[in-house]
Image 1 (tube, rainbow over the protein chains, first blue to last red):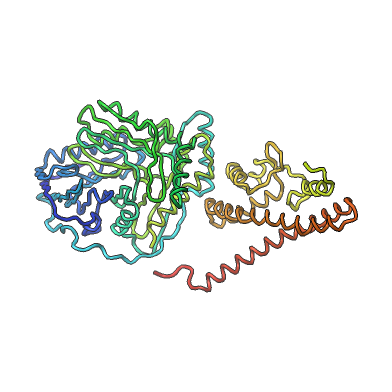
Image 2: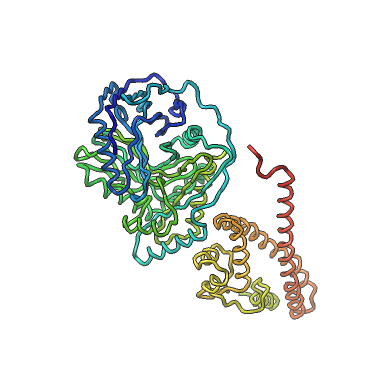
Length: 413
Length: 172
Protein backbone atom coordinates (compact mmCIF):
# COMPACT_ATOMS: atom_id res chain seq x y z
CA UNK A 1 0.00 0.00 0.00
CA UNK A 2 1.21 3.44 -0.95
CA UNK A 3 1.42 5.75 2.06
CA UNK A 4 0.32 9.22 0.94
CA UNK A 5 1.80 12.57 1.79
CA UNK A 6 1.68 14.20 5.17
CA UNK A 7 -1.85 14.59 6.47
CA UNK A 8 -2.93 17.52 8.55
CA UNK A 9 -5.57 16.33 10.99
CA UNK A 10 -7.47 18.87 13.10
CA UNK A 11 -10.16 17.96 15.63
CA UNK A 12 -12.29 20.69 17.19
CA UNK A 13 -15.54 20.82 19.15
CA UNK A 14 -18.62 21.32 16.98
CA UNK A 15 -21.80 22.99 18.12
CA UNK A 16 -24.34 20.85 16.27
CA UNK A 17 -26.70 18.37 17.87
CA UNK A 18 -28.46 17.15 14.71
CA UNK A 19 -28.63 13.47 13.87
CA UNK A 20 -25.32 12.26 12.41
CA UNK A 21 -26.97 10.93 9.24
CA UNK A 22 -28.50 14.33 8.52
CA UNK A 23 -25.04 15.90 8.43
CA UNK A 24 -23.81 13.89 5.43
CA UNK A 25 -23.63 16.38 2.51
CA UNK A 26 -22.63 14.02 -0.31
CA UNK A 27 -23.13 10.48 -1.54
CA UNK A 28 -19.54 9.46 -0.82
CA UNK A 29 -20.48 8.98 2.83
CA UNK A 30 -19.53 6.83 5.80
CA UNK A 31 -21.44 6.11 8.99
CA UNK A 32 -21.14 4.21 12.25
CA UNK A 33 -23.89 5.18 14.64
CA UNK A 34 -25.97 3.89 17.52
CA UNK A 35 -28.45 5.77 19.74
CA UNK A 36 -27.37 9.05 18.22
CA UNK A 37 -23.67 8.56 18.98
CA UNK A 38 -20.89 7.53 16.64
CA UNK A 39 -19.15 8.88 13.57
CA UNK A 40 -20.25 10.32 10.22
CA UNK A 41 -17.69 10.96 7.50
CA UNK A 42 -17.47 12.10 3.91
CA UNK A 43 -14.91 12.59 1.18
CA UNK A 44 -11.85 10.36 0.94
CA UNK A 45 -8.50 11.52 2.26
CA UNK A 46 -6.89 8.10 2.21
CA UNK A 47 -8.18 4.73 1.09
CA UNK A 48 -6.21 1.80 2.49
CA UNK A 49 -6.63 -1.67 0.99
CA UNK A 50 -4.96 -4.24 3.26
CA UNK A 51 -5.46 -7.04 0.72
CA UNK A 52 -6.15 -10.66 1.53
CA UNK A 53 -4.86 -13.22 3.97
CA UNK A 54 -5.06 -13.48 7.74
CA UNK A 55 -2.45 -10.71 7.94
CA UNK A 56 -4.88 -8.15 6.53
CA UNK A 57 -5.73 -6.85 10.02
CA UNK A 58 -2.06 -6.40 10.94
CA UNK A 59 -1.38 -4.71 7.60
CA UNK A 60 -4.27 -2.31 8.12
CA UNK A 61 -3.08 -1.50 11.63
CA UNK A 62 0.47 -0.87 10.36
CA UNK A 63 -0.76 1.29 7.47
CA UNK A 64 -2.80 3.46 9.83
CA UNK A 65 0.17 3.73 12.19
CA UNK A 66 2.39 4.78 9.25
CA UNK A 67 -0.13 7.45 8.30
CA UNK A 68 -0.13 8.74 11.87
CA UNK A 69 3.66 8.76 12.01
CA UNK A 70 3.70 11.10 8.99
CA UNK A 71 0.71 13.21 10.04
CA UNK A 72 0.40 16.42 11.95
CA UNK A 73 -2.45 15.81 14.39
CA UNK A 74 -4.01 18.61 16.41
CA UNK A 75 -6.76 17.14 18.59
CA UNK A 76 -8.33 19.73 20.89
CA UNK A 77 -11.11 17.40 22.07
CA UNK A 78 -9.45 14.14 23.19
CA UNK A 79 -12.33 11.65 22.97
CA UNK A 80 -12.39 8.19 21.37
CA UNK A 81 -12.64 8.60 17.58
CA UNK A 82 -10.96 12.00 17.58
CA UNK A 83 -7.69 12.69 15.80
CA UNK A 84 -6.75 10.40 12.95
CA UNK A 85 -9.49 7.79 12.51
CA UNK A 86 -10.69 5.56 9.69
CA UNK A 87 -13.89 3.69 8.87
CA UNK A 88 -13.16 0.00 8.34
CA UNK A 89 -14.87 -2.90 6.65
CA UNK A 90 -13.21 -6.31 6.30
CA UNK A 91 -14.21 -9.38 4.33
CA UNK A 92 -15.36 -12.43 6.25
CA UNK A 93 -13.01 -14.87 4.51
CA UNK A 94 -9.29 -14.01 4.48
CA UNK A 95 -9.15 -15.22 0.86
CA UNK A 96 -11.71 -12.65 -0.30
CA UNK A 97 -10.44 -9.27 -1.56
CA UNK A 98 -12.34 -6.10 -0.71
CA UNK A 99 -11.27 -5.18 2.82
CA UNK A 100 -10.90 -1.43 3.14
CA UNK A 101 -10.10 1.42 5.52
CA UNK A 102 -11.19 4.93 4.62
CA UNK A 103 -9.90 8.08 6.27
CA UNK A 104 -12.55 10.67 5.38
CA UNK A 105 -11.82 14.32 4.53
CA UNK A 106 -14.39 15.42 7.08
CA UNK A 107 -15.72 13.58 10.07
CA UNK A 108 -18.27 14.52 12.71
CA UNK A 109 -18.33 12.47 15.89
CA UNK A 110 -20.57 12.34 18.90
CA UNK A 111 -19.66 10.65 22.17
CA UNK A 112 -21.19 11.08 25.64
CA UNK A 113 -23.09 14.15 24.51
CA UNK A 114 -20.08 15.92 22.99
CA UNK A 115 -19.85 16.62 19.26
CA UNK A 116 -16.69 17.34 17.35
CA UNK A 117 -15.45 17.70 13.79
CA UNK A 118 -12.22 16.42 12.29
CA UNK A 119 -10.75 17.90 9.09
CA UNK A 120 -8.15 15.97 7.15
CA UNK A 121 -6.16 17.87 4.57
CA UNK A 122 -2.93 17.37 2.62
CA UNK A 123 -1.00 19.23 -0.04
CA UNK A 124 -2.22 16.92 -2.79
CA UNK A 125 -5.87 16.84 -1.70
CA UNK A 126 -8.51 19.15 -3.21
CA UNK A 127 -9.68 22.19 -1.27
CA UNK A 128 -13.40 22.09 -1.96
CA UNK A 129 -14.76 19.64 0.57
CA UNK A 130 -18.24 20.66 1.74
CA UNK A 131 -19.04 21.16 5.37
CA UNK A 132 -21.89 19.34 7.13
CA UNK A 133 -25.17 19.39 5.20
CA UNK A 134 -27.38 22.39 5.90
CA UNK A 135 -30.63 20.46 5.42
CA UNK A 136 -31.63 16.81 5.77
CA UNK A 137 -31.66 14.74 2.58
CA UNK A 138 -35.00 15.02 0.73
CA UNK A 139 -36.71 11.70 0.06
CA UNK A 140 -35.24 10.33 -3.15
CA UNK A 141 -37.35 8.84 -5.93
CA UNK A 142 -37.82 5.28 -4.75
CA UNK A 143 -39.32 2.12 -6.03
CA UNK A 144 -40.19 -1.32 -4.80
CA UNK A 145 -37.30 -3.69 -4.14
CA UNK A 146 -37.86 -6.91 -6.02
CA UNK A 147 -36.55 -10.43 -5.50
CA UNK A 148 -34.01 -11.43 -8.12
CA UNK A 149 -32.88 -14.88 -6.96
CA UNK A 150 -30.29 -16.45 -4.65
CA UNK A 151 -26.77 -17.77 -5.16
CA UNK A 152 -27.91 -21.18 -3.99
CA UNK A 153 -31.53 -22.35 -4.41
CA UNK A 154 -33.35 -22.95 -1.12
CA UNK A 155 -33.55 -26.69 -1.80
CA UNK A 156 -29.76 -26.97 -2.00
CA UNK A 157 -29.24 -24.73 1.00
CA UNK A 158 -31.56 -26.87 3.09
CA UNK A 159 -29.64 -29.93 1.93
CA UNK A 160 -26.38 -28.22 2.95
CA UNK A 161 -27.77 -27.62 6.45
CA UNK A 162 -28.77 -31.29 6.67
CA UNK A 163 -25.24 -32.31 5.66
CA UNK A 164 -23.79 -29.95 8.26
CA UNK A 165 -26.01 -31.47 10.96
CA UNK A 166 -24.77 -34.91 9.92
CA UNK A 167 -21.14 -33.74 10.21
CA UNK A 168 -21.91 -32.36 13.67
CA UNK A 169 -23.59 -35.57 14.76
CA UNK A 170 -20.62 -37.54 13.41
CA UNK A 171 -18.38 -35.45 15.68
CA UNK A 172 -16.52 -33.61 12.90
CA UNK A 173 -17.86 -30.20 13.93
CA UNK A 174 -19.55 -28.65 16.96
CA UNK A 175 -21.21 -25.69 15.29
CA UNK A 176 -21.26 -24.00 11.91
CA UNK A 177 -23.07 -20.87 10.77
CA UNK A 178 -24.49 -21.22 7.28
CA UNK A 179 -25.67 -18.14 5.41
CA UNK A 180 -27.51 -17.44 2.20
CA UNK A 181 -28.32 -14.43 0.08
CA UNK A 182 -31.09 -12.73 -1.86
CA UNK A 183 -30.37 -10.51 -4.83
CA UNK A 184 -32.82 -7.64 -5.26
CA UNK A 185 -33.34 -5.02 -7.91
CA UNK A 186 -35.24 -1.79 -8.28
CA UNK A 187 -36.01 0.69 -11.06
CA UNK A 188 -34.18 3.41 -9.19
CA UNK A 189 -30.84 3.70 -7.53
CA UNK A 190 -30.85 2.65 -3.88
CA UNK A 191 -29.73 5.74 -2.00
CA UNK A 192 -27.17 4.86 0.70
CA UNK A 193 -27.70 7.99 2.82
CA UNK A 194 -31.47 7.67 2.73
CA UNK A 195 -31.33 3.98 3.63
CA UNK A 196 -28.80 4.59 6.42
CA UNK A 197 -31.17 7.17 7.91
CA UNK A 198 -34.05 4.73 7.70
CA UNK A 199 -32.08 1.97 9.37
CA UNK A 200 -30.84 4.26 12.14
CA UNK A 201 -34.41 5.40 12.88
CA UNK A 202 -35.87 1.89 12.69
CA UNK A 203 -33.16 0.16 14.70
CA UNK A 204 -31.85 2.76 17.18
CA UNK A 205 -30.34 0.10 19.46
CA UNK A 206 -28.28 -1.40 16.65
CA UNK A 207 -25.06 -0.08 15.11
CA UNK A 208 -26.07 1.43 11.76
CA UNK A 209 -23.16 1.37 9.36
CA UNK A 210 -22.32 2.52 5.87
CA UNK A 211 -18.83 1.81 4.58
CA UNK A 212 -18.05 1.52 0.89
CA UNK A 213 -21.56 0.46 -0.22
CA UNK A 214 -21.96 -2.03 2.63
CA UNK A 215 -24.95 -0.88 4.65
CA UNK A 216 -26.71 -2.40 7.63
CA UNK A 217 -27.81 -2.22 11.24
CA UNK A 218 -26.13 -4.84 13.38
CA UNK A 219 -26.90 -5.71 16.98
CA UNK A 220 -23.53 -7.34 17.55
CA UNK A 221 -20.50 -5.59 19.01
CA UNK A 222 -17.39 -7.53 18.03
CA UNK A 223 -15.01 -5.40 20.07
CA UNK A 224 -14.67 -1.91 21.52
CA UNK A 225 -11.30 -0.72 22.76
CA UNK A 226 -11.05 2.48 24.72
CA UNK A 227 -7.57 2.86 26.18
CA UNK A 228 -7.00 -0.34 28.12
CA UNK A 229 -10.73 -1.13 28.41
CA UNK A 230 -12.08 -3.79 26.10
CA UNK A 231 -15.64 -5.02 25.63
CA UNK A 232 -17.23 -7.64 23.38
CA UNK A 233 -20.87 -8.77 23.44
CA UNK A 234 -21.30 -12.03 21.52
CA UNK A 235 -24.84 -12.85 20.48
CA UNK A 236 -26.14 -16.23 19.39
CA UNK A 237 -29.55 -17.78 19.75
CA UNK A 238 -32.57 -15.68 18.89
CA UNK A 239 -36.33 -15.52 19.19
CA UNK A 240 -38.93 -13.07 17.94
CA UNK A 241 -40.36 -10.40 20.24
CA UNK A 242 -43.84 -11.00 21.56
CA UNK A 243 -46.88 -9.02 20.45
CA UNK A 244 -47.50 -7.86 24.00
CA UNK A 245 -45.58 -7.74 27.29
CA UNK A 246 -46.71 -11.19 28.43
CA UNK A 247 -45.99 -12.91 25.11
CA UNK A 248 -42.66 -11.11 24.96
CA UNK A 249 -41.59 -12.34 28.39
CA UNK A 250 -42.73 -15.84 27.47
CA UNK A 251 -40.70 -15.82 24.25
CA UNK A 252 -37.68 -14.57 26.20
CA UNK A 253 -38.07 -17.20 28.89
CA UNK A 254 -38.41 -19.90 26.24
CA UNK A 255 -35.20 -18.69 24.61
CA UNK A 256 -33.30 -18.78 27.91
CA UNK A 257 -34.63 -22.27 28.51
CA UNK A 258 -33.98 -23.57 25.00
CA UNK A 259 -31.27 -26.20 25.07
CA UNK A 260 -30.39 -25.77 21.42
CA UNK A 261 -30.10 -21.96 21.68
CA UNK A 262 -28.06 -22.19 24.89
CA UNK A 263 -25.65 -24.60 23.22
CA UNK A 264 -25.41 -22.40 20.14
CA UNK A 265 -24.74 -19.40 22.37
CA UNK A 266 -22.16 -21.15 24.54
CA UNK A 267 -19.91 -21.75 21.51
CA UNK A 268 -20.01 -18.06 20.59
CA UNK A 269 -19.44 -16.80 24.15
CA UNK A 270 -16.58 -19.23 24.76
CA UNK A 271 -14.83 -18.34 21.50
CA UNK A 272 -14.86 -14.65 22.43
CA UNK A 273 -13.74 -15.24 26.03
CA UNK A 274 -10.95 -17.56 24.82
CA UNK A 275 -9.70 -14.90 22.40
CA UNK A 276 -9.85 -11.91 24.78
CA UNK A 277 -9.17 -13.04 28.32
CA UNK A 278 -5.54 -14.10 27.66
CA UNK A 279 -4.83 -10.53 26.56
CA UNK A 280 -6.26 -9.03 29.77
CA UNK A 281 -5.00 -8.49 33.29
CA UNK A 282 -8.52 -8.78 34.57
CA UNK A 283 -11.64 -9.94 32.77
CA UNK A 284 -15.29 -10.46 33.61
CA UNK A 285 -17.55 -12.74 31.63
CA UNK A 286 -21.31 -12.89 32.30
CA UNK A 287 -21.80 -16.15 34.21
CA UNK A 288 -25.11 -16.71 32.43
CA UNK A 289 -26.35 -15.34 29.13
CA UNK A 290 -28.87 -12.51 29.35
CA UNK A 291 -31.58 -11.40 26.97
CA UNK A 292 -30.80 -8.55 24.62
CA UNK A 293 -34.08 -7.14 23.35
CA UNK A 294 -33.96 -5.24 20.08
CA UNK A 295 -36.93 -3.97 18.08
CA UNK A 296 -38.26 -7.11 16.43
CA UNK A 297 -35.95 -9.81 17.80
CA UNK A 298 -34.34 -10.87 21.06
CA UNK A 299 -30.97 -12.55 21.44
CA UNK A 300 -29.03 -14.42 24.07
CA UNK A 301 -26.04 -12.24 24.96
CA UNK A 302 -22.89 -12.50 27.04
CA UNK A 303 -20.68 -9.61 28.10
CA UNK A 304 -16.92 -10.12 27.97
CA UNK A 305 -15.20 -7.15 29.59
CA UNK A 306 -11.56 -6.70 30.46
CA UNK A 307 -8.56 -4.51 31.13
CA UNK A 308 -5.85 -5.15 28.55
CA UNK A 309 -2.44 -6.16 29.84
CA UNK A 310 -0.69 -4.11 27.15
CA UNK A 311 -1.34 -1.48 24.49
CA UNK A 312 -2.56 -3.85 21.78
CA UNK A 313 -4.62 -2.04 19.17
CA UNK A 314 -8.22 -2.84 18.37
CA UNK A 315 -7.28 -4.46 15.04
CA UNK A 316 -5.01 -6.91 16.86
CA UNK A 317 -8.03 -7.83 18.97
CA UNK A 318 -10.13 -8.18 15.80
CA UNK A 319 -7.47 -10.49 14.42
CA UNK A 320 -7.80 -12.74 17.48
CA UNK A 321 -11.58 -12.67 17.53
CA UNK A 322 -12.63 -12.97 13.93
CA UNK A 323 -14.48 -15.04 13.02
CA UNK A 324 -16.25 -15.71 16.31
CA UNK A 325 -18.42 -18.79 16.62
CA UNK A 326 -21.42 -16.45 16.21
CA UNK A 327 -20.65 -16.19 12.48
CA UNK A 328 -18.14 -18.97 11.82
CA UNK A 329 -18.30 -21.99 14.05
CA UNK A 330 -16.39 -24.41 16.27
CA UNK A 331 -13.70 -25.59 15.70
CA UNK A 332 -13.00 -22.35 13.87
CA UNK A 333 -10.92 -23.61 10.94
CA UNK A 334 -13.03 -26.67 10.25
CA UNK A 335 -16.15 -24.49 10.32
CA UNK A 336 -14.57 -22.02 7.89
CA UNK A 337 -13.75 -24.93 5.61
CA UNK A 338 -17.32 -26.23 5.82
CA UNK A 339 -18.67 -22.76 4.99
CA UNK A 340 -16.42 -22.57 1.93
CA UNK A 341 -17.54 -25.99 0.76
CA UNK A 342 -21.24 -25.77 1.48
CA UNK A 343 -22.56 -22.22 1.21
CA UNK A 344 -22.24 -21.92 -2.55
CA UNK A 345 -21.58 -18.18 -2.35
CA UNK A 346 -18.99 -15.58 -1.43
CA UNK A 347 -19.92 -13.76 1.79
CA UNK A 348 -17.95 -10.70 0.71
CA UNK A 349 -17.97 -8.36 3.72
CA UNK A 350 -21.10 -9.87 5.25
CA UNK A 351 -20.28 -11.19 8.74
CA UNK A 352 -16.93 -9.41 8.60
CA UNK A 353 -15.74 -6.77 11.07
CA UNK A 354 -17.07 -3.27 10.34
CA UNK A 355 -16.74 0.02 12.26
CA UNK A 356 -14.02 2.54 12.99
CA UNK A 357 -10.40 2.43 14.02
CA UNK A 358 -8.23 5.24 15.36
CA UNK A 359 -4.51 5.51 14.83
CA UNK A 360 -3.97 5.34 18.60
CA UNK A 361 -5.47 1.82 18.64
CA UNK A 362 -8.90 2.74 19.98
CA UNK A 363 -11.88 1.63 17.95
CA UNK A 364 -15.29 0.06 17.82
CA UNK A 365 -16.21 -2.68 15.38
CA UNK A 366 -19.31 -4.76 15.00
CA UNK A 367 -20.05 -7.85 12.96
CA UNK A 368 -21.64 -6.89 9.64
CA UNK A 369 -24.98 -8.66 10.02
CA UNK A 370 -28.45 -7.56 8.89
CA UNK A 371 -26.83 -5.86 5.95
CA UNK A 372 -26.83 -5.38 2.21
CA UNK A 373 -24.18 -4.75 -0.42
CA UNK A 374 -25.50 -1.89 -2.55
CA UNK A 375 -24.74 -1.61 -6.23
CA UNK A 376 -26.69 1.12 -7.96
CA UNK A 377 -30.24 -0.12 -8.36
CA UNK A 378 -29.37 -3.60 -7.11
CA UNK A 379 -28.40 -5.06 -3.79
CA UNK A 380 -27.41 -8.30 -2.21
CA UNK A 381 -28.95 -9.17 1.15
CA UNK A 382 -27.60 -11.78 3.54
CA UNK A 383 -28.83 -13.87 6.44
CA UNK A 384 -27.35 -16.77 8.38
CA UNK A 385 -28.25 -19.31 11.04
CA UNK A 386 -26.21 -21.26 13.55
CA UNK A 387 -26.32 -25.02 13.03
CA UNK A 388 -25.70 -27.27 16.04
CA UNK A 389 -26.63 -30.84 16.98
CA UNK A 390 -30.39 -31.14 16.80
CA UNK A 391 -30.88 -28.26 14.34
CA UNK A 392 -33.75 -28.84 11.95
CA UNK A 393 -32.88 -27.70 8.41
CA UNK A 394 -36.40 -26.41 7.73
CA UNK A 395 -36.21 -24.26 10.89
CA UNK A 396 -32.91 -22.74 9.77
CA UNK A 397 -34.42 -22.08 6.32
CA UNK A 398 -37.37 -20.36 7.95
CA UNK A 399 -35.15 -18.32 10.32
CA UNK A 400 -33.11 -16.99 7.40
CA UNK A 401 -36.27 -16.38 5.36
CA UNK A 402 -37.64 -14.14 8.11
CA UNK A 403 -34.33 -12.28 8.45
CA UNK A 404 -34.08 -11.69 4.69
CA UNK A 405 -37.66 -10.48 4.55
CA UNK A 406 -36.95 -8.00 7.36
CA UNK A 407 -33.91 -6.66 5.52
CA UNK A 408 -35.83 -6.38 2.25
CA UNK A 409 -38.56 -4.53 4.12
CA UNK A 410 -36.00 -2.08 5.48
CA UNK A 411 -34.85 -1.28 1.92
CA UNK A 412 -38.34 -1.11 0.46
CA UNK A 413 -40.26 1.99 -0.50
CA UNK B 1 -60.98 -48.46 23.22
CA UNK B 2 -64.64 -48.74 22.43
CA UNK B 3 -66.55 -52.01 22.49
CA UNK B 4 -69.33 -50.41 20.47
CA UNK B 5 -69.71 -52.48 17.25
CA UNK B 6 -70.82 -49.50 15.11
CA UNK B 7 -67.83 -47.40 16.08
CA UNK B 8 -65.66 -50.49 15.62
CA UNK B 9 -66.83 -50.83 12.00
CA UNK B 10 -66.03 -47.15 11.43
CA UNK B 11 -62.57 -47.57 12.95
CA UNK B 12 -61.96 -50.57 10.68
CA UNK B 13 -63.03 -48.52 7.64
CA UNK B 14 -60.71 -45.67 8.72
CA UNK B 15 -57.71 -47.89 9.11
CA UNK B 16 -57.92 -49.01 5.51
CA UNK B 17 -58.78 -45.58 4.12
CA UNK B 18 -55.65 -43.56 4.83
CA UNK B 19 -57.32 -40.72 2.98
CA UNK B 20 -55.41 -41.90 -0.06
CA UNK B 21 -56.92 -42.65 -3.41
CA UNK B 22 -54.62 -45.56 -4.22
CA UNK B 23 -55.38 -49.16 -3.30
CA UNK B 24 -51.77 -50.32 -2.89
CA UNK B 25 -50.41 -50.62 0.63
CA UNK B 26 -47.98 -47.74 1.36
CA UNK B 27 -44.42 -48.94 0.98
CA UNK B 28 -42.15 -46.10 -0.20
CA UNK B 29 -39.18 -45.17 1.96
CA UNK B 30 -37.77 -41.64 2.22
CA UNK B 31 -35.02 -42.66 -0.19
CA UNK B 32 -37.54 -44.02 -2.73
CA UNK B 33 -39.60 -40.82 -2.46
CA UNK B 34 -36.45 -38.77 -2.95
CA UNK B 35 -35.36 -40.69 -5.98
CA UNK B 36 -38.77 -40.63 -7.65
CA UNK B 37 -39.50 -36.98 -6.92
CA UNK B 38 -36.01 -35.69 -7.73
CA UNK B 39 -35.65 -34.00 -4.35
CA UNK B 40 -32.80 -34.54 -1.89
CA UNK B 41 -33.72 -36.95 0.95
CA UNK B 42 -33.13 -34.13 3.45
CA UNK B 43 -35.91 -32.11 1.79
CA UNK B 44 -38.29 -35.10 1.84
CA UNK B 45 -37.56 -35.58 5.54
CA UNK B 46 -38.15 -31.89 6.26
CA UNK B 47 -41.48 -31.98 4.40
CA UNK B 48 -42.47 -35.10 6.37
CA UNK B 49 -41.54 -33.46 9.68
CA UNK B 50 -43.76 -30.51 8.78
CA UNK B 51 -46.67 -32.97 8.70
CA UNK B 52 -47.22 -32.59 4.94
CA UNK B 53 -46.65 -36.28 4.22
CA UNK B 54 -48.52 -39.09 5.93
CA UNK B 55 -46.48 -42.19 6.67
CA UNK B 56 -48.32 -45.39 7.48
CA UNK B 57 -49.11 -45.28 11.23
CA UNK B 58 -46.57 -47.20 13.26
CA UNK B 59 -44.21 -47.74 10.33
CA UNK B 60 -40.56 -47.51 11.35
CA UNK B 61 -38.69 -46.57 9.24
CA UNK B 62 -41.59 -44.49 7.91
CA UNK B 63 -43.33 -45.83 4.80
CA UNK B 64 -45.22 -43.59 2.43
CA UNK B 65 -47.74 -44.04 -0.37
CA UNK B 66 -48.27 -42.88 -3.94
CA UNK B 67 -50.30 -39.97 -2.58
CA UNK B 68 -47.23 -38.69 -0.75
CA UNK B 69 -45.21 -39.02 -3.95
CA UNK B 70 -47.91 -37.01 -5.75
CA UNK B 71 -47.59 -34.28 -3.09
CA UNK B 72 -43.83 -34.12 -3.58
CA UNK B 73 -44.13 -34.06 -7.38
CA UNK B 74 -46.64 -31.23 -7.16
CA UNK B 75 -44.24 -29.37 -4.88
CA UNK B 76 -41.40 -29.96 -7.33
CA UNK B 77 -43.53 -28.44 -10.10
CA UNK B 78 -43.84 -25.26 -8.05
CA UNK B 79 -40.13 -25.23 -7.23
CA UNK B 80 -39.18 -25.70 -10.87
CA UNK B 81 -41.36 -22.70 -11.76
CA UNK B 82 -39.11 -20.65 -9.47
CA UNK B 83 -40.92 -20.60 -6.16
CA UNK B 84 -38.24 -20.78 -3.44
CA UNK B 85 -38.59 -23.72 -1.07
CA UNK B 86 -38.74 -21.39 1.95
CA UNK B 87 -41.83 -19.64 0.54
CA UNK B 88 -43.41 -22.95 -0.48
CA UNK B 89 -42.99 -24.35 3.04
CA UNK B 90 -44.47 -21.17 4.50
CA UNK B 91 -47.50 -21.50 2.20
CA UNK B 92 -47.78 -25.17 3.10
CA UNK B 93 -47.73 -24.42 6.84
CA UNK B 94 -50.48 -21.83 6.46
CA UNK B 95 -52.58 -24.20 4.35
CA UNK B 96 -52.01 -27.02 6.82
CA UNK B 97 -53.11 -24.94 9.78
CA UNK B 98 -56.34 -23.83 8.08
CA UNK B 99 -57.19 -27.27 6.77
CA UNK B 100 -56.57 -29.00 10.11
CA UNK B 101 -59.20 -26.86 11.77
CA UNK B 102 -61.56 -27.57 8.91
CA UNK B 103 -60.91 -31.31 9.11
CA UNK B 104 -61.64 -31.36 12.86
CA UNK B 105 -64.85 -29.45 12.28
CA UNK B 106 -65.91 -31.71 9.38
CA UNK B 107 -65.46 -34.79 11.58
CA UNK B 108 -67.71 -33.24 14.23
CA UNK B 109 -70.33 -32.47 11.59
CA UNK B 110 -70.19 -36.09 10.33
CA UNK B 111 -70.64 -37.45 13.82
CA UNK B 112 -73.55 -35.20 14.75
CA UNK B 113 -75.45 -35.19 11.44
CA UNK B 114 -74.65 -38.52 9.80
CA UNK B 115 -73.69 -40.95 12.55
CA UNK B 116 -76.25 -39.86 15.15
CA UNK B 117 -79.29 -40.17 12.85
CA UNK B 118 -78.09 -43.53 11.49
CA UNK B 119 -77.68 -44.87 15.00
CA UNK B 120 -81.05 -43.47 15.92
CA UNK B 121 -82.92 -45.00 12.99
CA UNK B 122 -81.13 -48.25 12.14
CA UNK B 123 -82.85 -51.52 13.03
CA UNK B 124 -79.73 -53.11 14.43
CA UNK B 125 -76.01 -52.61 14.89
CA UNK B 126 -75.11 -54.41 11.64
CA UNK B 127 -77.38 -52.21 9.52
CA UNK B 128 -76.07 -49.09 11.30
CA UNK B 129 -72.48 -50.16 10.69
CA UNK B 130 -73.14 -50.87 6.98
CA UNK B 131 -74.90 -47.55 6.43
CA UNK B 132 -72.22 -45.57 8.27
CA UNK B 133 -69.28 -47.16 6.52
CA UNK B 134 -71.07 -46.73 3.19
CA UNK B 135 -71.67 -43.05 3.94
CA UNK B 136 -68.07 -42.53 5.01
CA UNK B 137 -66.64 -44.19 1.90
CA UNK B 138 -68.78 -42.04 -0.38
CA UNK B 139 -68.25 -38.79 1.49
CA UNK B 140 -64.46 -38.88 1.83
CA UNK B 141 -63.46 -38.55 -1.84
CA UNK B 142 -66.35 -36.11 -2.48
CA UNK B 143 -65.11 -33.86 0.31
CA UNK B 144 -61.60 -33.92 -1.07
CA UNK B 145 -62.87 -33.03 -4.53
CA UNK B 146 -64.94 -30.11 -3.18
CA UNK B 147 -62.10 -28.59 -1.13
CA UNK B 148 -59.52 -29.00 -3.89
CA UNK B 149 -61.74 -27.63 -6.66
CA UNK B 150 -62.89 -24.75 -4.50
CA UNK B 151 -59.35 -23.67 -3.70
CA UNK B 152 -58.33 -23.83 -7.35
CA UNK B 153 -61.25 -21.58 -8.28
CA UNK B 154 -60.48 -19.18 -5.43
CA UNK B 155 -56.89 -18.95 -6.63
CA UNK B 156 -57.99 -18.06 -10.16
CA UNK B 157 -60.52 -15.52 -8.86
CA UNK B 158 -57.92 -13.94 -6.55
CA UNK B 159 -55.42 -13.63 -9.38
CA UNK B 160 -58.04 -12.19 -11.71
CA UNK B 161 -59.13 -9.61 -9.13
CA UNK B 162 -55.53 -8.63 -8.48
CA UNK B 163 -54.75 -8.18 -12.16
CA UNK B 164 -57.99 -6.28 -12.82
CA UNK B 165 -57.22 -4.00 -9.87
CA UNK B 166 -54.40 -2.39 -11.80
CA UNK B 167 -50.84 -3.15 -12.88
CA UNK B 168 -49.35 -5.88 -10.69
CA UNK B 169 -46.03 -4.05 -10.81
CA UNK B 170 -46.79 -0.31 -10.97
CA UNK B 171 -44.16 1.88 -12.60
CA UNK B 172 -42.45 4.14 -10.05
